[in-house]
Length: 90
Image (cartoon, rainbow, N blue to C red):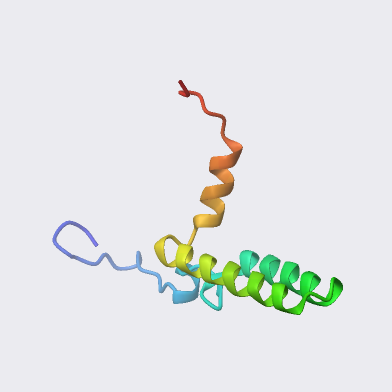
């Protein structure tokens, strides 16, 4: 589209919705949900602490869903933030 909403022939391409939306698993980013489930399963099955595993899973998934509602790319932003040094720190 140019200024007034005119379409130029040959310069349009359909964009599938899955290319523009983040990949979520149960409302949480996929990698965070998989890591959270793995840690909770290791705690519940490996250490035989069933209740603690369920609590870790529920709390971790809930926090990830709330963060993803605010910003679906919060995991990559957090990783980038932790990698950068504080250049202007007092």
